Length: 554
Image (tube, rainbow, N blue to C red):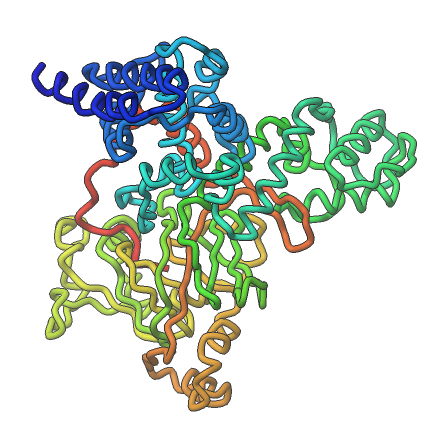
């Protein structure tokens, strides 16, 4: 108890000094001194610190008030201003109930020193978390997992709260802590709009056969109304039960926003997307705002941005889109991870070294079915992974009896038409050992859902990407690049200026045309993040990393 009494005494010293030094209005100082004394007594309680059935961060609060000289932070009506900031948490996709909103509201205007002290602590604790959450995310990935590795944004919660307490407008101060990225601000506006839509909801399209242009069906007026609600169809569009051309255009606009082939036919996929509830879209927007809060303030004036969920790669300059191209990402068992890095090298006619995990899980079963598989695909086998490893005759190995050997052998495929890396590879240093590359399977880029790789990102226009990356290297003209490619000789070129690349997982965003886009949660990461945000204390820490990466493949 010595530490507790000492803390009370330390925090109470300024109270006595303030009363003794006030020569004029002593009555004004007495109530504040009472609040200080009550605040010190509450902070002296042992952890866990619980007030009004709300759990508070006792250690952080003690550090905050010590840094503030033991004085209350929210006197003189400031608590009401801070309470507005808590209520405004919804604007950033956060829940006021996570920041003691109800307990704070019950104590606003309280006259008793004890209740004022409780209010001060509740508000301070709320802003310790709210300011940090708005600035860097409520559940930022603090450790590398198998699917995500982003640098943790530095946060000084105590400094943020002290800044809020000194601000003329607390809600404005908190709002300014959010990412300044235009994409985040556009999501913020979209969230407000969709919250309004969710208040009334939108009509659900009943089950039935596909709706095709020209059809005369009772469901058509419902479809029309559904598209008007979300702005895919003008509000003044008149119509009957006939599926007419204006309605077809509205359906295509909806399909385009949801990554569905815009054929104008309301089939199963389109119907399912139409019937997602407005409240679910609100939640989806909020989840993607959380992901934007994890990112650095500066993504680079010139950078590559891959959106896994959208199967797209964008070349960005000064905040503007220069070019967009399709990509193929990892299938379910080989999910493409989220990370930020730089493209450092362009490799023409790359040689593919099969990662051990792929050799074990993909290559071995094929060898067991067809012992001539390696010869047919031009893959060589070496006795080990060293540079001086000797070649091995694959026919000398019983792939059924020597399964354990497969990860100790190195399998390599020379450049050629069947090389899964295609003609160009873009080297991206990262802990997952994934990269961007070309692909000999060009038909994959025509599919609406492009999850076919082993985790790496296959690029739809590798020549265009190489040209953009190397534009400040006149010695590597288009003609020279084509000459090197034609010779099938492997050539590694270091970029004069490495270019940042951000591999993201965004299932909702606002397009350049202002349209709100949604995509299917192909890896289930929306649901995983939703559960983390709902039960942050119950979420287990990431498990140990696998010693061997499962990626580094096509």
